Image (cartoon, rainbow, N blue to C red; front, top):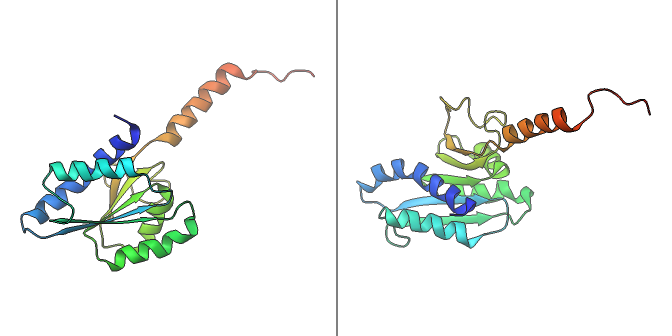
Length: 165
């Protein structure tokens, strides 16, 4: 399974619990997705398939409103404003710039982040144990791993003493 498909699978799982409660009421669920980058069809198809396996079929009881900034981050506030105006049941924000825009746009609509490199440092959540607010989702821990790798690299590869030349 590719990394993007895995992330969307986990993201779909994070959305499922609130949606299962809504499904009991047999209403159409609206998901707003915000992507700061270019649209990639394969992860979106995996997301649709996972929701379909759970009984959510687009056009029947599921609406996915997808917005992409195509790399123009300055467009994110307007795109998330459009999504919020559609009154989705949940917002899915892909990557840190989209999560930040969604956080500024609403404090009432649940936001699923997928993924965030440093959700605590970015101010998206208070802690992993008690996130607080309206944001949950996936953290990729890339920053922690890279800091660890850099520390290991510098301890093994860089000279310990300053060379005389």
